[in-house]
Amino acid sequence: MRKPNIVYMFCDELRCDALSCYPGAPKGIQTPNLDRLAQTGTLFENCFCNSPVCVPSRYSLLTGLYPETTGVYHNEAAKENYAKKKRFLTIPQVFKAQGYQTANFGKQHLPKGVEPFGVHNPEGSKIKEPGLGLCTDIIATKGIKSPIGGIFPPEIPYPPNAVTHNAIQWMKEQDAPYMVRISWLQPHTPVVPLPHYAFLYDWLDFPVCDMQNARLSRFEQKYIENVNDGLSENEARRAKACYYGLVRWVDDQVGMIISALEEQGLLDDTILLFGADHGVMLGENHRYAKQNFACWSHRVPLIISYGKKLASGVRRKDICENLDLGKTLFSLAGIQAPGQFRGRDLFSEETAEYVYATIGYGDKGSFTFPNKKCGLYTEGRGWPMRSCIRSLDYRFDMNIRIDGEQAGGEDEDMFLADLRKDPAEQFNVADREEYAGTVLMLREKLLAHINAERARGEA
Image 1 (cartoon, rainbow, N blue to C red):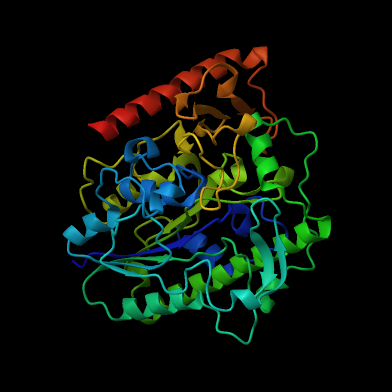
Image 2: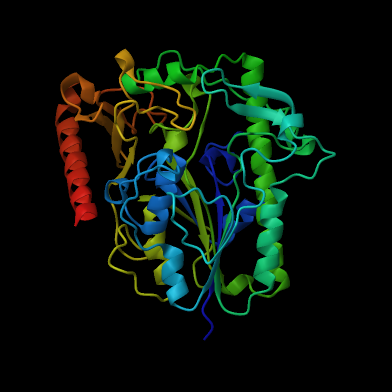
């Protein structure tokens, strides 16, 4: 019996409400190809990344390990001078050992020296691609100077199209079973879709999302200060139209992948996944980008389909995390999961009550945005390491390390959201007496998790 092919469609900075098949999508948003994928498979409504930033999230997903184990907490790990850490087995390497051809097309963005795929073609995935200097109507945040809206010149070939084209061509040439990841940079900044997509949703009245009465942690308040968006209401709405329009471009790419598999008669025997490394904020409380545990940046879409071998049209509300994908894929393909991989097989009877995430090194001179060397913490200190534990009822996060030292006392800056009353996670109730027991319990669980996973990485 032929082993199933695996096609993993992967985005950067994709929030769940940008897909019309997810609850909360603005009325009028359409992603028909992803809707179709959801109708033929399983959609997970409460999947979270293990770090809301690219490199640690992507490495965690591929290794099935938490950042505490990998030692990778932020994007510094992709730099030339980054201190080498212990290397770990990755999902594509496991499949290669089982006779699979493996390939990644588009963005990879992993720790320096980590090359898990047999083929890696980055064409079309760079942030600075040809033609970007000619984009018009650019909207950018002031603090991090990030282009969150604009229009790509239609007379120039759109570079990201190459990712889809190259992947389809490679898939058609394979005889052996394959695992391919099609990794679009989009809708990550620069958010500069072609005109058709840029103006697709101009007629929608996007909310500005300025929640004046929010009660946030000091960490998030400082994050807002560091982003310093400086946008007018019209600019904020225009930027949202560009973002959701660019997601529609992603949806069209998904349609092309599905059509290519149908033409080859492979669709019913292919494991299809769609997901993202993390989400993004689009102006909520003047927050943009990611780098914190707000639901828009921490939660990610996840859809899995496998012909008639999985039930169709299923919606799952149980909590899960990106590092569950290793065990899940191995099980679907009939492969024994190596002992390294944490998490759970999402189609087994195993359940999870909590998920975990961490971001930042917490060293002296650490920045909110290390690639831009932008954003220190309060009183000029380095940006903290911060960790989060989530259940379906609560989100709890706190500072773990600042300037190379363990955070303590007020520096822990604990945040608790009661999701049953506050699903948008706007009000910190960590200091309220009625939540004292919950705070104590979640803090203990989070610290125990951190210590256990660090020990695992040092073993």
